[in-house]
Length: 287
Image 1 (cartoon, one colour):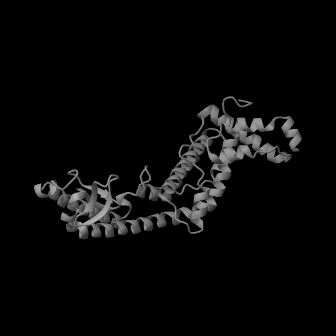
Image 2 (cartoon, rainbow, N blue to C red):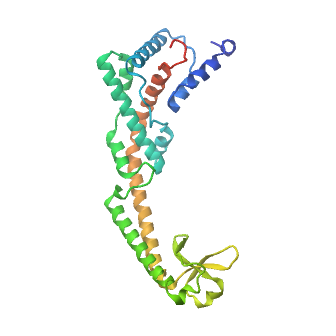
Image 3 (cartoon, helix red, strand yellow):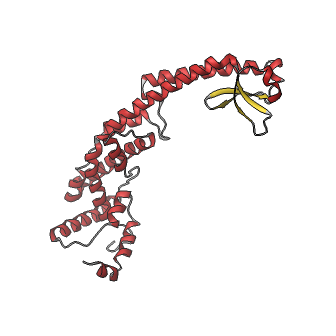
């Protein structure tokens, strides 16, 4: 069917309407690219899927696709050696979980009411729960790497917390001293870069040893790292670098496991698109 006929039929408006009812990026893309077909057997299969979807909706309601997102770009990058970030890995885990819930929903539905085509499509889904569990064991819902992601990371973070506590304790003792307090703009401990510092009045710079890391806009306050904690801050910096390296090891491991999903996910995306595009919704013709 040529574009002129489709324009006359306002086919684009129909697709735009259909796209409003999709639940995932893959379904939206499938709806956007949907074309009339001259393949009689193919049309019969799509009509069967639509009929089955009507029955699913009538008997059980619409399954939730919560958590499902288009992770194909991330998986493709993982498959060629790129490292995924925590947000990307969290999306992978959430999508695996969403796929598993839909697969089980349709399996339960198939036991009560035969939905051969949709069940066959759902059977293509690979649950990969071990990958989902590994991601959830390492990354929280805010996409932060958990202390429990590895024994080494847990040890490093204990060292970090202990090191920070010792530096703060030393600086708190210093700023409470009357001889030091008079040289401070405020009696507080703050951070510049990744170094603990205290705010010293500029006129006392020559009386106060240490490293200047910053100054206020007026120049009246210098943020100084006292000489007595330089070695402690250096040690803390080394520990933070160890933390970064260990997090990279963890993310590389999760990325490698996620990369094996690529081939399966390409199959899964066909399922999502077919299922969502055929799913009836209120307001659509035939509903």
